[in-house]
Length: 389
Ligand code: AMP
View 1: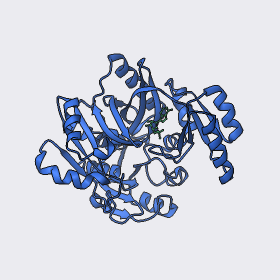
View 2 (view 1 turned 30 degrees about the horizontal axis):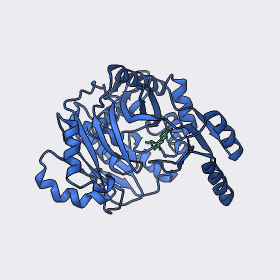
View 3 (view 1 turned 180 degrees about the vertical axis):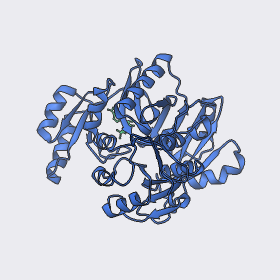
View 4 (view 1 turned 45 degrees about the vertical axis):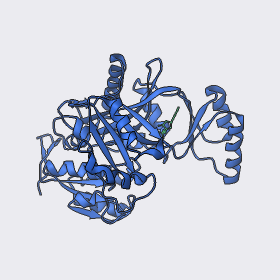
């Protein structure tokens, strides 16, 4: 089977076309990784519990099993040359157990850091990047003490497992604290948590960085707008000063070096009114806010991920055109489909999900434009996203 070419000291250099990339997780991120892997000449296997999941539709084989099944991870490892993942809640121990039979170029430290908000914040601060002030809290007394330092308003988040605003609440006053206490005693359980100071940001942003273990390349900083805690729009590039762009790039490079990053890492940011760049969270994988790169950049986040984990050299991504990306959630599928014929400028991506559900990410649309604000207005004026107005 074609595999990794090796230098004489045994270090892995480059994954050869014809080799197999195994992806843990078969959603849209895995699907777009798989499409990229395929046109680089790689074969693709995917582990996902849902038969014919979005990634399986474009992969060579699927192992249909739970993500945390050790047997399934071993089977994927046996049938692949490298393993990657499309989400961060992968069983890091299970991956460590198969590293003698398959390459895991991203390693598992990256997973262990990004699976836990306390580890993540510590890592970010240790690498010279700012976060909101934070404290680990494991019970009501610790929460009360942390609030004395951090003050109101603050955001209480579970250490692990939260996404898109799940597992978090804003505490604005003592009555919110009393509610937490009541819930706590009802449930008889206080999940390991983190308390963060509330950042009064001017806007949310993100920056992507990709690496092949030793060289790292950044994508432009983009602006993100959320509705109901779900990404709605990405505006690329963000309108920021040279200093903000430079700070974001510098912090991304520090974090990537700290991880000896292979593949793509997304860094979610807050930009404050006084131009501070603050890290909110990390995603050790391609990210929804990087989908615009498929049409708008000289190399996209999925190609950069695949090349990075394959140990290939990485060209510096260039923004070829400003762009707007809008998510198509379940409730937007029918309205957007009805308008495809009228919008040749819409680069529509559909993830092939069998079941259309409210707020489920079903696809996205990217529009290349020289007028970002005008394009946002045009998109909103279609009425397709009126539920988010
Ligand atoms: P997260 O799950 O950490 O990405 O948070 C989801 C959303 O909650 C973010 O996109 C922000 O809009 C908001 N948020 C999270 N943490 C903070 C914070 N410390 N200050 C203000 N807003 C926050």
